[in-house]
Length: 100
Image 1 (cartoon, one colour):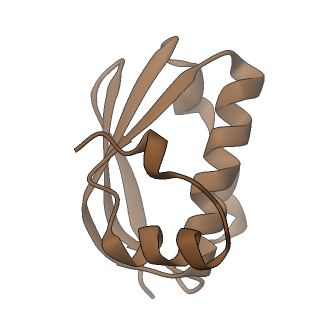
Image 2 (cartoon, rainbow, N blue to C red; image 1 turned 180 degrees about the vertical axis):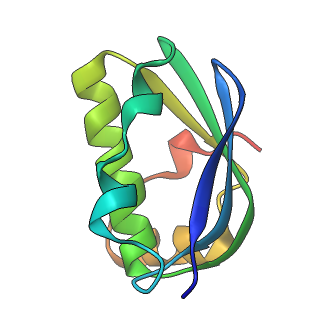
Image 3 (cartoon, one colour; image 1 turned 90 degrees about the horizontal axis):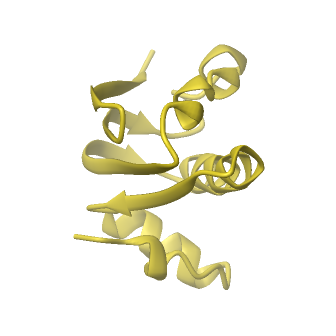
């Protein structure tokens, strides 16, 4: 079964590795938003995401919502083109969060 990992590089910088897809997301990893409390400003680097679909986009949106509840500024780096395309087709503007 495909998986993804949130890998801490520092309190403010995390790498996301693996697949952000319907098959890789489950209740356990979606519920683990603790990293969103590690700093007032976070950068999530998605360069090592190997596949993404609408479930991955939903996860990014949920991270954005949760970070706002935590009072955390969340920035994404290297958003995969698949997610940017899905967001555009869904009329969701995540481009202002993309800091390559």
